[in-house]
View 1 (cartoon, rainbow, N blue to C red):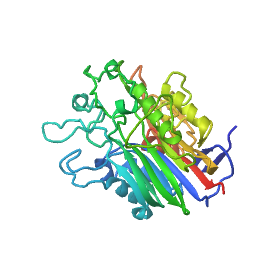
View 2 (view 1 turned 45 degrees about the horizontal axis):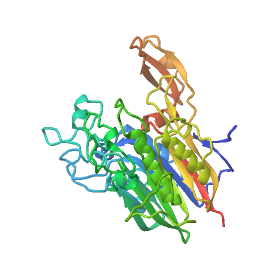
View 3 (view 1 turned 90 degrees about the horizontal axis):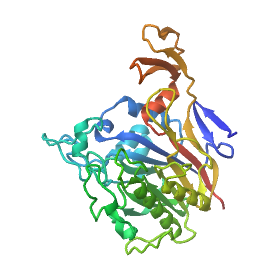
View 4 (view 1 turned 180 degrees about the vertical axis):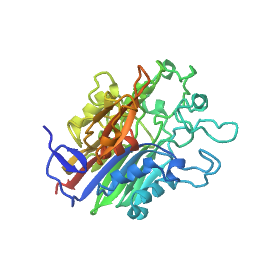
Amino acid sequence: MRPIFILALIFISSCGSFSNKAPIRIVHYNIKELDSNKINKPNPQLQYVKNILSKLDFNILSLNEVQYDIPGVPSYKFKSRGENLRNLGSYIDPKMKNWNFSFHPANTGALARKKGNGNFYTDFSDPRARDFADKVNYGIFPAQYSTGALFDFKKTYEVLVKDLKWSDFNKRINLSRYKQANGKSLPKDMELFDKTFSDVTLNIKGREVHLILLHTVPAYHFGNKRSPNYIRNADQLRFLEWYLTGKTDFPVELEHVKPLPPGTPFIAVGDWNTDITNKKNKGSEILRRLFNKFQPWMKNPGHTNESPGFAKKRLKLTLDYMMFSDHFEIIKSGVVMANEDRVFMGCNKNQAKFKNIPEDRKLTYWTNRKNKKKCFVGVNKDFFELKEASDHFPIFADLKFKD
């Protein structure tokens, strides 16, 4: 049984004893669909995010699904460029206003089209949005789902891989085998990365450490049986493997990108979008190879993602990961979780005993698929905040240099 440390939230831990004074604490969090609308206007989701992250004392914060702000995106009222990450960090904790950061526009949504009023769709649930979406790199407006990181260390150098053609990385790939969601062929010059790949060199206590940021495409077809997602996810993880080790399971010859020299200290982190326990996805196989070569933040992490809502049966997957070179000792690591403390209240509003909900619980509901009735449940407030903040849970690790 894995030990746990309780501090309002629960850190599902993998090793060691907890230390608040750890030299390096890295937190990774895929915060669901943070666009300029949300970041520029206080809302419950951001308040929940702030409540969650304020309980963690980190000096590196990796974030996924943050829109890189571009003037006119997603609507004409937005004028800033590249300020969303810093603004988000300052909202979470004012001290991060002066932190260094890495933030670049994702390829996601680059081919999305505007509506007739000159604005982009922002709601995927609107069926019309799909017709205007980017069907190669996905997304319904430019720079959606960008990757960023804030850190209380000096940044000395950065390598950004964004425009690398998929066929230049994997010369064996036959893109004619796959189709866009609308049945059209994929462009021959499509990028390997639907988002970006970043290598940020940090100076940590006088040592150069490479912070690798990657948010891969989901290893899922989303209804398109000829989707390239499975093999694209695998090739994005092959690129990570090649970048960290100098080789993968096919030869790679790139002119402008070179792998890390052997023995380079690194921290690799992100939503890698395939469950390491999956026996069918090629990307999962590559993850298992990487975990055998380097230190995973947890050997048996459990789920880091689950389907939205509060129904009793929810899809749960391991999608978020950290991995470290052998230069580090992992003091403590885990998934930020809370006990659900579930109390079923019935599926009829008139019968629900609302007055009996304890003060430390939150009343919420889900809709029964069969009879469409609302079913009410009381859950722990910390768990409620985690669920409302994102469909992913934060993961963390406390590290120190071995010598």
